[in-house]
Amino acid sequence: MSNKKGMVSLKGNLIKSSEVPRYNFFAHLVDFDGPLLSLFRGENNKDALFMWVDNDSSRNRWCIIPIVRSDLNDYLSQSITLKDLINRQDFLIYFNYRETIRKEGRVLVRSSCKEVNIEDIPEKYMPKENSYLFDGICTPEAMSLKSEVCSNYDLGIDKELYFDDLAIIPKKFIELYSFHYALDHLHIPAVKDRVLELTGKWKGGISVVNMFSGLKNLIPSIHKPRVQSLAYNSPGNIKLNLIASLADEIKISVSASMSAIRTKRMANLYDSTYRYFSNNGISGFDTEGDVKQEFLIDEVKANLEKRVRIFIKLLKLDAYDRVMQWIGGNELQRLRTILAYYRRFKILSEYQREGKLLIGQSLLIDQS
Amino acid sequence: MTNNLTIKVNEVMDYLYADELYALPKCPPARAKPTKMIAWRWTFSPHTDKCFSPVAVLDPKRVLTGSDSTKCSCWALSMFESQNAAVARMQELDSLIPNFKPTKGDHVSQVNLTEIDGVATPPDARGHFDFHPCKSFDLKSNSKVIGPIP
Image 1 (tube, chains in turn brown, red):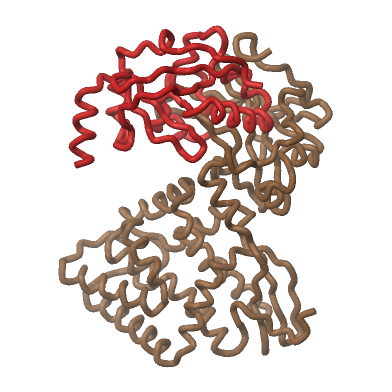
Image 2: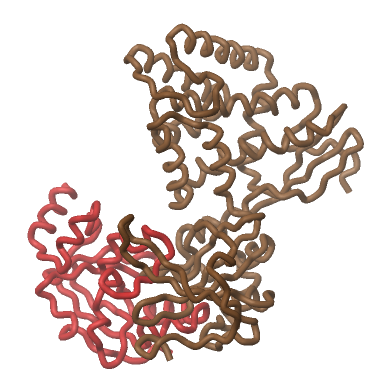
């Protein structure tokens, strides 16, 4: 039925390729001489597994299994099987993929997209009863996903808060979380490629807005901070489900900034950096859009590098010092990134200093 | 010391697909060494030409991203250090993707490797390794089908 004779005939409704939801590759979970099962990030926090099912002499056939966060967690922890995941759907989308060479290089062409009802899935396309994600078939990326289990994490909130504040706190928090996530997950090729793609644009001038929004979009839903509960009657609490170790890194930095001396040192360094930019004709101190590329003499480079190092120490980002060097860019670009981080960090730090926010701890008296 | 040895190995070995290997960075990897062993590989019975072709030369390529088909390992032959490792791996994959075994190979074959036949990476924790053969190595005549994968 397969290979020379062609692929299994599928009973279902043909759909246009444009009707297939958009997904971005995140990681291969099972691979042998090529991917067999891969995790893709979707829009609106709806991710999917792409499972290989068949081929003929010119095309491979894949199926898309939409997956919600709790199901993916259960599948990664071997609580449920791939067959269970499929049986929770009403239908699956199958499509054929063919690699072809065009002017722009190798491209993958998708065709014959078809919606197939679960009861019409051919037996040879259906995983077996024991289709668990055994460690023995996992890629290193799958093992990494298995080991990083999200847990609940509190953001205590208190005092007089405006509606704006309830937008600003989550926005700044997720921007910092995304930054930490990216630098902590450079072992995943899709994360590394995205970070390098973003930092690669540094050649033509950095856009740190793109840097931070681009990083936010690379987190699969399984690792995004998800609201577990939200209560506010001064005091209150936002209970999130996330990778606690990353949130703790933000907590440590913000907690350290509660020291008046450290806060003053950071503010002074920020102000002096502004003056240094101004005195040396360097643009884009607080501009987060594109700025022109500048030629830096060695003395200026050394000064900027020194400022990067001090900021990293003050922000307690020491663990990322080497990573920051690795992701490239010159001293000015690294400093702009740290300044952009600091501007976001400072907002959360001010909330915490005013007693309106406490990262890592609920302010609700009754925890039951 | 290791680097010097690597250079010597690559100077001596006349690899099959040498042009393609050397076009890739660190390919074959420095950890790949000549080895004498009985290796195991999934094949069909009887053997076909495709049984001993690396995925880089087979069509269609099973890829989802542009970089999936440009890895050094795509030019190597996947092998196992024991029959048990080869069978166990296929059985786990078969439970997940039942159509994989009929496409990839439903039998296990024994392959006799000697130091002059090519270089092999150290087996991973699951007994799998990559083997980069030399032009002179006749895989078919040095292999025999042992039996079907249950």
